[in-house]
Image (cartoon, rainbow, N blue to C red; front, side):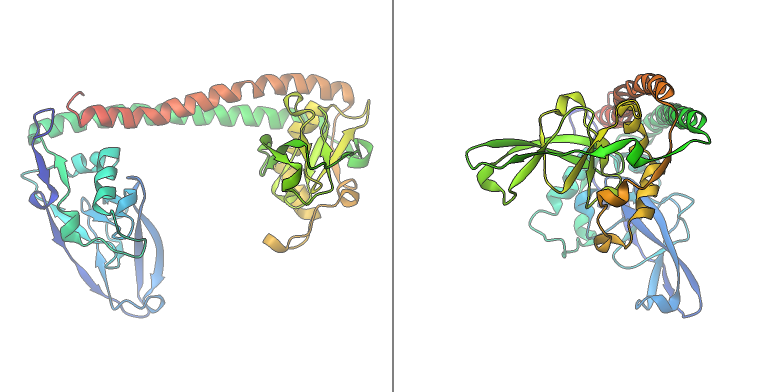
Length: 383
C-alpha cells in the first residue's frame, strides 16, 4: 500500500506478455520501431526491406500495448504504443504486453512511464547488469506501480491531459516568440547590410599578445563553444601542465577564432568579463580596425548560422580531416556589413534582444519543469 492509500500492484497483475509474430520475407517492407529513453515512448524508426534484417520474424505492436527496450529499461525505455506507431514491428529486443482493461487504463501507464519513480524502479531492477545484458520480460513485470480504482484513474488522467495540453500550448507560444526574436535580428542585419560587402581584412587585423609560459604561473583559460555558443571560462592551467611555450592574452573586443573548429562556428568576440584571460596558440586573435567595425555587432555576425556556412565553404575536407581555418584565408572572406554608425545602432538593439536570452532560458526551464511536477503530484494522489 502506498502512502496515499492506493495499492502498489506488480505489473504482472495488470499486463500480460503478447507476441504477434510476422514472418520476414525479402521484397516486403516493414515499419520498424524503437523506444526512447526517459519515458519519451515508442517511435517509428525506419521502413526496411525484409532482406535488410537477419531476423526471420518480427513482432507487430498495436495501439495501447506496453513496450520496453530490454537493454535500456534502466534508462526509462518504457512506453505505451500510440496510434501513429501501431502496426510497426520490433525484434525480440522489444517485448510487448497487453493491459487488463478491467484493472488499468493504458493512459494511466502512459503518464506513469514518464515519472522518475518508474525510472528509479527500472534502474534498481537492472543493478549489476552491463550494457550488454537484457532484462527478461518476467523480471520487468515484477515492478510495482500505484493503482487506484478505474474511476480515480480516469479522473486523474483527464486532469493530467488537460494540464499537459496547456503546457504544450505555452511551449508553442514560447517557440513562436523565440523564432520571432531571431527573425527580427536576422532581418535587421539583412536590411542594414544590403548591397554592401566588405572583406574581413578591412574590418579586423591579426593581433596576438603572446605571453611566454612560466612554470611557476597560473593561466586562466578560455574555450569557444561551436555553433555560435561563444567564449566561456575554463580552470586555470599551471605552467607545468602544458607543452605550449606561450599563450595569447585576450582583451575585450578581440575576435577569437579556433583554427581547428572554426568551421563549426567556434568563433566569437571576447566580452569584458573574459579580458586578461588566456587562449591557447590554437586560437587566433584579431583586433577590430577602428572606425571600420563595432565589436558587439561583429559578434552577432560571426556567431550566426549564415557566417558558419561561410566558414565551412572556406575550409576543405570532412569531419576530422577538415583543414584548419588559417588567418590568411579567413581574412579574405567577404561579408555583408553596414556602415559603422549603423553597426553601432544595430548593436544596441541586438544587445537588448540578447538581454532576453536569460528570460527565454528561464521560461524554457520553468515550462520543462511543469509536467514532471504535475506527474509527481498526480501519482502521490495530490492532484
